[in-house]
Image (cartoon, rainbow, N blue to C red; front, top):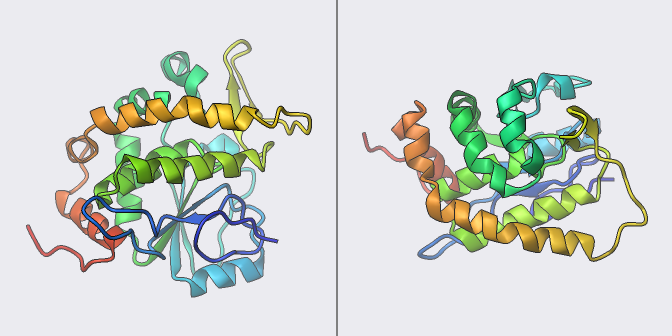
Length: 254
């Protein structure tokens, strides 16, 4: 059956699924439901799960995984799939800089600065969707956490809301170890994280606690809107996307 975290429908077979709605906006209010969902790779979503997703308004999937991770193509009827990797796993400079931190917000700023075109493509794919969007990578934790956080900043969510969303994605991915790819800097190889039934129960709590300061620093120092506009994303699209995530009418400003 579906595993869902947070508010939103449970789509049969989905892993680490959550709606980006319901998060607190700075100045009051909360983000709208049914605009963007995030999850792990949806390879196991059933026909009934996809039917429920379409009924909830899902019209586009933005897949952040690299080509080597896509063992099977998910093309559910009535739902468009856009491939939008946020990194180059063959880029030795990227691996040297970000490889040790791929499961940590510490990697976000160097990743974003290295690949503005890729990130612009991913955000544009979300913003141009005619309906709800599912944003996912392999585990729904790191790349999805990075792009999802950028979307939430555009909507006006503060750092506490970002932490809520990031932490539930991080914890949700831990429930499905073996589906998230990890880079081993010592061997230079990619491999799935392996399940570990004997993990220290406090390990996950410590990992989350250790990542909070890095996410706070990213929020305080990274200009999301300025970065995306410089990367070539249309300012009107960014306003419209922020409006949709807030649940208001698309902006008519030019």
